Image 1 (tube, helix red, strand yellow):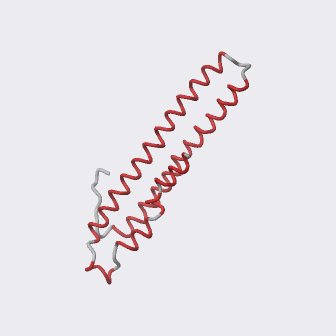
Image 2: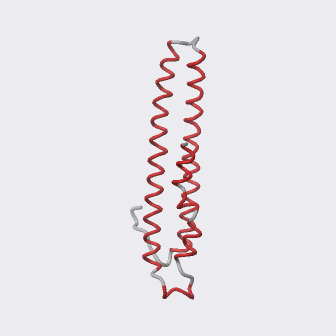
Image 3: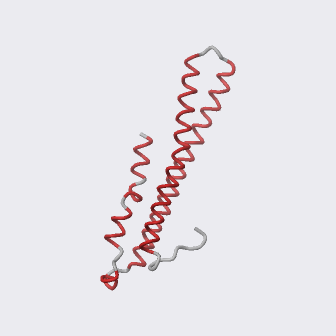
Length: 130
């Protein structure tokens, strides 16, 4: 379920090339569309999408880390409990997977910003603080 949520949340990044091709004009159509406004709106959408995904991933990592910590504490008191050990290993695996999603997120974001900058750099300059 978590993977599906991230997939849906990454839709804007998956469709950025199409979005730019359909909304940012080439030189021959430059007068017909306000590319600066279009690029600004896309920039704001990307910023919002990236920030919300980052929050979701980091929140899940924090929650899973707390579960792992708790299970470790309980495990120290019950070294013979194999069910507890399996549960701990499962949560540790989930935590590592979530942490790797941060790396995936970085790659996805970098790709989107590269494409955005290639098409929008002459139409829109992002604020310096972001």
